[in-house]
Amino acid sequence: PAGVSANYPGRNGISVDATVSPSMVYFADSADAQIKRQKADSIVAAETNMFLDSWDAGYENLHLYVPRGTTIDSANRMLYWSDSDFRCIARISLDRTSGSDEQVLLTGLSTPSGIVHRPDGTLYWTDETLGRVSKATISGKSATTDTYITPEGTTIPRSLAYMSSTV
Image (cartoon, rainbow, N blue to C red; front, side, top):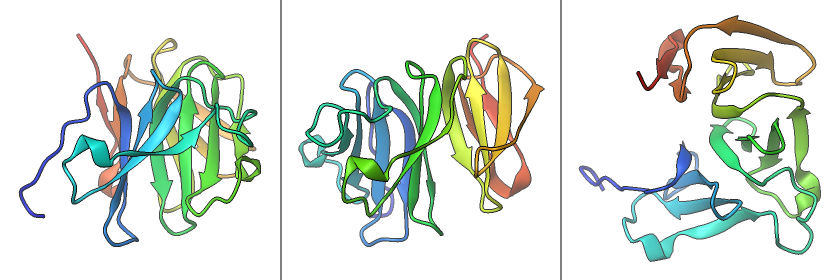
């Protein structure tokens, strides 16, 4: 409902899938090695449920241990996440049927955290250790890097990049 806000203490990388009704909020839970979801129109924490859990049968090989960020490609119904322990960016279908749906796109990263997907297929992510914002094509085959500040989050509405940092 309009005017309702929610607080997700200890959660990172909140993203919203507005293509379903009601909209779903996805977030990384680093402490539990999970990606969780909740109906956007619910403010009851008990209504949060697990979307991905690296400890569930069939998901043991997921690159999900310390998820730091999430983003959604609504057009292709994909959820992307960054994991600072596996040092990677991976994706899985929002309509997943098993852990084998996972695709690891980028590996060997330093400390990926905030991540955002643009409709043109570009991924941007922040790296806390290296102090930069990086970008890659959706295929993960090519990447270019630009250094800005030591970021903790990022978003890119209307082709403008916004980053946050602790000073």
